[in-house]
Image 1 (cartoon, one colour):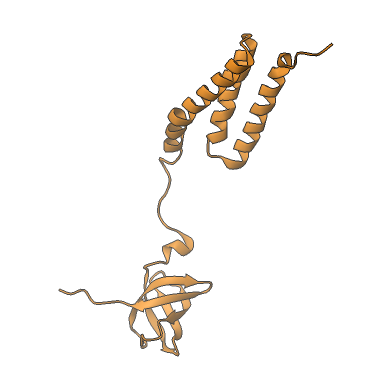
Image 2: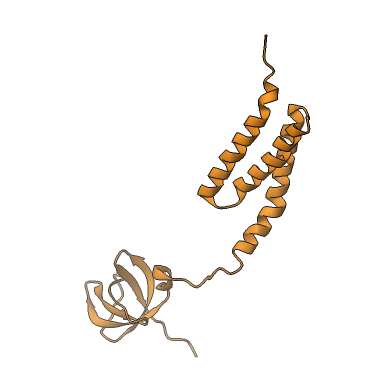
Length: 155
């Protein structure tokens, strides 16, 4: 009269593996790929061999953990090996030098950066900057760069 639900565990293992693969496609960090592989090899494979449900869960957990701590770091290292770490866009502006194009009035002025771009800029209230002074970009607030005067090297 009662159906033994353990005979349908293979459907659970395949569904879980598909779910993990879909989540992996959204995250792209190899975590759920390792879980999907552990689910397929440990859970589904053990089910095909006729092992009991608790052994299937145990094997899936062990294989997933082994893959997470051994294969995943190697995959991430290989993936990031050729990454270009050169800052770009706004990150490249931090610390960039420039020259004051228009004297600062009430803390605001115009600066031409060393990369050729001209930005509206802001300086600290106590800093006085005149036309021609050298400055360095300290922060970026929207379309305004915050600059500080370049301190001469003590030689």
